[in-house]
Figure (cartoon, helix red, strand yellow):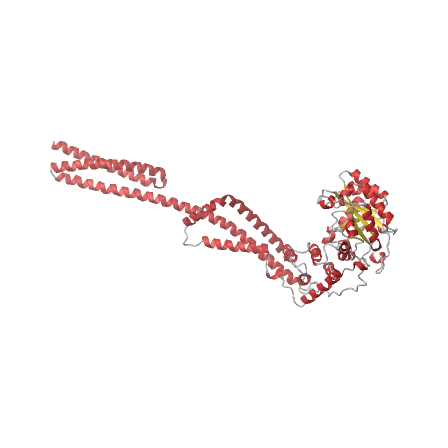
Length: 607
């Protein structure tokens, strides 16, 4: 298409409306701020893109500042067909800007769809769909003041919630002589909601000029679907092309050849590193893992990026030779930017300095911050488990530690933190499983594959890393559950040990009292036997002592009975022993009563 439309070395203009033929869907690269610049336009043209737009340019700044013209608009002989998109709020500003670019482009487009607040506050973008008369006047002014008859004028709009207002706007600009209309099928306040294809279809049915659909076009299947659904004449893609510049050529994902072409073109045109790197981030998004993205996103120079692509994808970049200045023709001779040429030379020298020194491969020697944190957490868990298992620290001492006021303050957050960590570890565990499954199948790539000589080793390295992450996350999750259970068991064991110690003290006290009662009973028996042999006087004295002793014993017995009753309530575990002691006491009491009876009988006999 490029060769038929415009031969290299010619600035001849052709009518862009001729691109829209019945049954053919024109494939268009959308205007994208910072991205749809000359280098990226050159790339997508290699993959069947039929028409490209420049990034949006503020018309008033473009007219005032030569620096703005140098920065915002660059082109060359082969960058055709080309449409320059302007943001304007005055008809004359748009007409003057169109006159300036008309020798070097095939048309201009008025942005009536940008929903950003700053643009709408300045009177640009989507706010213009509420000013159909102003848009109509802008189209007429451009058509009247640009001398080239084939120069196209188009607008890119968003839709109203009221469909009638959108159709009315389109009819008014059609009457003013618009070449075609691009419709983004969302309202101004909508961002990621579904595209309203039914509205685009109604707009197409009410107009006699080409209509281009924009929004959520990410593959050729989407193109066919939108065409069949709405009958539009062209499709415009933005994010779909950023992720896959070869989309219009039928590729489902960015081919490695497209990545190689982008590196060659970016170095050749002196693309700033930030833009160069961002484009590669979009291109590799679908074909790289999360870990690879994190590594690639922190690369800080073109030489590092090129070495990374060589090491991981086997892309051998050719040495870039700066084009002859006569071949690279920007907007005007005055606008040839010396800064851009020096940037190319500087980057080429940097590449030469690094070509014999390989960039250290971050992914093969270090772990990502995420997995470093998980591994550190695992080591901390292991250390804490070993600490809990130390034999010289008793459970009761651990319980004292667990009862510190510090733990009481954070106890309310403990369960929430415990569940949060479990959720994080489970997510990481399943992510690691996904990575293992992803790299477990080599898809037929062998060690002798000529096209990808190091892909086999690369996949094995990725598989090893994924398995390592799987083990780390799995053991971390397991030990986290074990640690919670260990703390619970230690606390319960310490509580049980404390209760057993209290019961043991009470049992010892009861046994001591029983032994004392038995000794006293033996003494009473001996006293009784001695009383039979002694005289009356001595027997009376002993009887008095015995009576006193019996009274004392009764008092003590009463106290002991009360103590035993309390022990029955507090200690069910020693109930049988207490009952035995009671029965023994009753027996001793009976013997004592018998003894008392004998004594009383003896006294009566004596009397």
